[in-house]
Image (cartoon, rainbow, N blue to C red):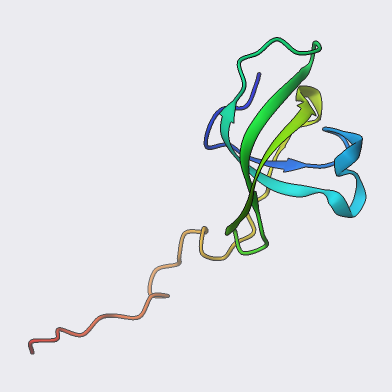
Length: 94
């Protein structure tokens, strides 16, 4: 199944040799080009994310569908917080 806008993917050597090894990246899909390509390949437009989950670069990439994997979300800001872990706000009027 092709990716859709909003998907967070880990792009590595399984998707294309150009992303092998230390050239792997985390990629947030913005659009999927609806154009005929070689079977099993697709053009994606999206943003490369850094370790904090911030978009750093907009790119178009050509990858194999069979090599796409969901990214593991490791950002502490994206995980649900445990009860009582957030500071309580004081009422500024009282």
